Length: 478
Ligand code: NDP
Image 1: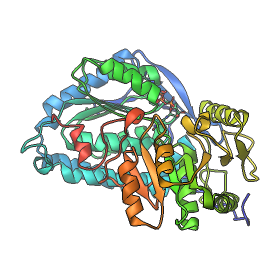
Image 2: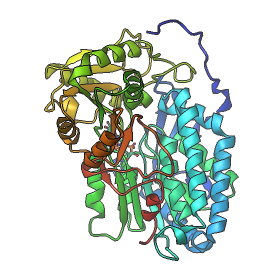
Image 3: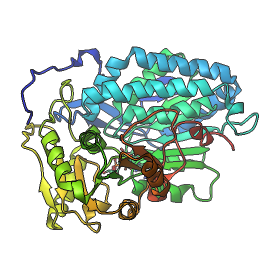
Image 4: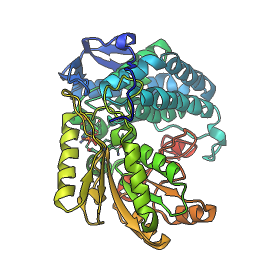
């Protein structure tokens, strides 16, 4: 698939020490589940079983929430912001110290290329802890009154696409504000959260401030529906987000939901096309397209569409798909067999609805879950591949003629998480940013994340913001 061959450059997995089985991290200790069962987590690039993990049952959820409540009442809510900040700085530094191990572990359990886990996920995890450590003793200056109070115990449920990064987005602001947490990682990617449990132990975090309970959807449901919860923070599918919204309705639980997306990446005829091509590739093929804010709909101005697509296809021919631990790999494995089925199904629907499917020549490994980078042209707004979140390396291309048409098409979606604009004109960027109904609008770039910048959606992409000063509001009684 590449223009020329690179010698293999695999990162050694020897740095990670995956145990054959794991318990639950409750009250500062790894404990066996009381009424739960066990499940296996596999390496999606090889289908090899990595470890056996506990699925917490209702009694385990009770126990984790009791530990979080005791830690909230007994220590964490009584500590000064300065002292909470010290712990957060310690967590941030430990993440940095163990960065290589965490990156390898994340790539093994999730399937994402080491280049991304090493250069994007793990550095951003440390950055989030550093950033919110800085807020812990300055909450009185954040614009929420002189002495904003924490909420109590937070139930946090996260998905599999950025396992450790989503953990950081949830835990760092919660702790900075004085809350304690029970977090459930996704069923297919529990290992980096369990490594983080070890980091909490290493940091001497008071027992019960962070509790990690593994399990599937049932564990997540038991956690968010539990009466001992003051705050629910969820990232995942819109469907589960709806169920959670129903379950918290009428309760006092404060809730933030970060759900799906179908972002438009809009390229005007005055855009620097080679840069736009890089942005399109980063927008939809980063993390195999398992990104809620992925630029999955390319809207290109008709006059440059042919030229842009030629350049894009040439560029896709140079992407390397394969071993996630190889430093030259651009596209890793699809996270699970279920997700691969969903991507295949929606791609077949795209063809049957009349769109034209294209992939570069690409050898897929024999074992594991793989899908080649794919581009659909001739897509119309009514096609399912233009409306539904595919959550895979699949780009749907539409064209437009005028800026007004670009806005209409970009906003013609039930979602509203992110968007991208590529143009030479600053005034057009500002005009577009005002009209696009999306929580984040990137200009002449895509998929850039910074802990200081709020992130969240409109419409079916959810509500509430994570990151930045805005991210504090979700964890304070304001
Ligand atoms: P889910 O929304 O089902 O999973 C997200 C998290 O919620 C996981 O930890 C999951 O556990 C948990 N969960 C599942 N059901 C419940 C429930 N009823 N109550 C509380 N927690 C629950 O996403 P999927 O992994 O099933 O992915 C399905 C689709 O969702 C994808 O194809 C993609 O389109 C979209 N998605 C969007 C994401 C985003 O960031 N916007 C992230 C992930 C997926 P478990 O892992 O055990 O199922």
